[in-house]
Image (cartoon, rainbow, N blue to C red; front, side, top):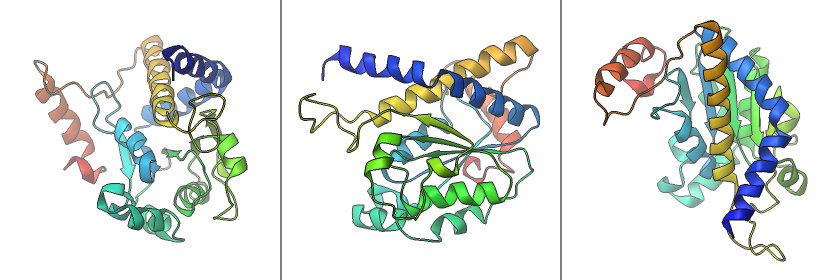
Length: 237
């Protein structure tokens, strides 16, 4: 893949999702203003997107990741594949939450058809929690309906990664490599953070943002955020 091809893809993603990104930023800002939590979930390689949202320098401290150990490919690829296709696993994860009524759930799933991401969205909607789906509508249209419905069909707002079925992009004539979903999801998340920063600045509102632990004062600033959020985010303990 040439660098131009990747940059062109991200530019197309930005244009395509511009209005939806504004809506997501408004939704998340309202969540933060009400002292709610941003919930993030995914399975398999989409856990890389979840990791990008959690305890990341410059990222939001009010993020609670939703996961199960069986979903990680490092715990065993076959087990991870089976777990994301297992009905009921997402419900067991969601059941452990104590919602305040001000949460927003992000579900990352490029295909958007397996049980775990779809059920996370359904659980959230049942609880009155808005859902932001970060997915590929093209990939969804080509994938089998394992959960009977899709993530995009059960989302409040959809952010489309515009990645092709199979998540490969090179060579253009017959793509077999260079998956685009991970870099695209990271780009979309950063677009949200940028919009949040600008909106918060206009309101004179301070966002709860992590600092790098390798910068002066970072540990002290992060410790204060951990004290604030760890009662509601167990993974910060």
